[in-house]
Length: 162
Image 1 (tube, one colour):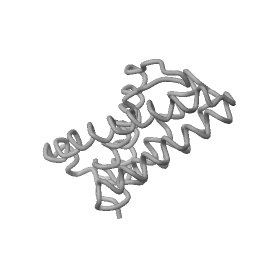
Image 2: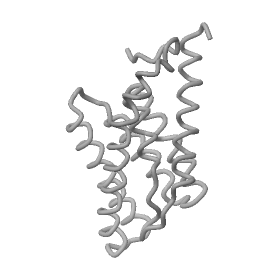
Image 3: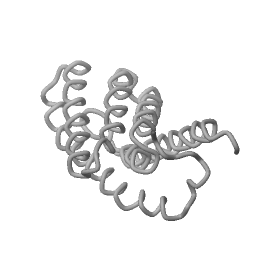
């Protein structure tokens, strides 16, 4: 494709679809919802295409995932995972990026649990599960993103953020 902006939009849409599929087919039920590898797709996007792409993929993939399973959480997931994708590649420091995105994801779902189900019995255990989910996603992305970059698959797609 010659139009790099169109190519980039298509690539982001593909990543959103892949993140959604990762989330949809790795669901493990937990007290307030489910554990999934959606976060890995979000972080891989952020690390390969940049923070704004990570935000878009996180917001859209999480929204559709929750619309199919837990619609009451959909607006929260749109914001939380969008922010997670943005923060997952905010600085050059991977530890800072991880910490910021983990605080937003874990804290965001604690608030969401309290608003949706009004239960500390759900919100407190979810702190642990959401922490594990975001950590697993970040670790997977730390492995997969550099491998994807090395393949050259993104060459010609205008993947560098300005």
